[in-house]
Image (cartoon, rainbow, N blue to C red):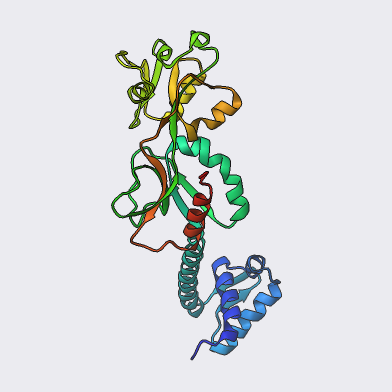
Amino acid sequence: MALRSDLLPALAAFESAARHQNFAHAAEELHLTASAVSHHVRKLEARLGVALFQRHARGVSLTAEGRLLADTAGGAINDIDVVMRDLHRHRDDRHVVRLTTLHSLAYTWLIPRLPSFIDAHPDIRLRIDTEISLTRFDDSGPDVGIRHGPGHWPGLAAIRLMDESLFPVANATLAGRAELHAPADIARLPLIGDLSHQGWHDWFRANGVHGVALDPQLVFSDATDALRAAAQGLGATLARERIVAPWLASGQLQRLPGEALPGRYAYHVVYPSHRKPRAAVRCVIDWLTAQSPE
């Protein structure tokens, strides 16, 4: 006997009634009336020519034939439900974009700009990773990233986003701040460093200051933490133009004397070169590159 489409509602009603052993509970689950569930079950019984339930004063119970059909129908419906959930999740995954970047850049540059991205692309779900180490762009890795470096990495396409410059900053309350008149004076302050490619030695040399002994009192692995320490009045730090902007705007940090040092490297939008970005990833790439100040 072929399973016809007009029997599917009856089969669904039967499966629910068999699971609950109760027509009223099945009706509540299916948003039907108990009489409608009963009608569906009777239709199925008439088509099969067997009784699926024994009906008695206390309710209903499955017959042997009913139990056989209930086990098979329940398994089939569960399998279909699993597949449908997977399909729905895969559909949703098309709108999820995994983005990796530096914590310092996310905190002070990316996050303040996200409202405009959300307004432009409310259907895209961003998953943002801010690991310090370089993330692998394999099949289970991120879709797009912002990296700071020379602009060429194996297996990645790179689009130049923005350059940077470095200059010293400190809190206005730092002891000795008022006596600073030239770059050489900064060497007398407690210095704060981070683990970047360029540091205090490069900046002092670029500003014509030589022969000073530099031994930063505090060194942080993340530039944001170095800025926080400087904002607390713990010393002067060498700030990156793109990262320090909100700290300067709020007055928590002030620029110190001296010329800015052009950054050796730039920020780049990167993505795997071996696969074409899907539509949602392309939207993120285009939005990021549109944020370039240049």
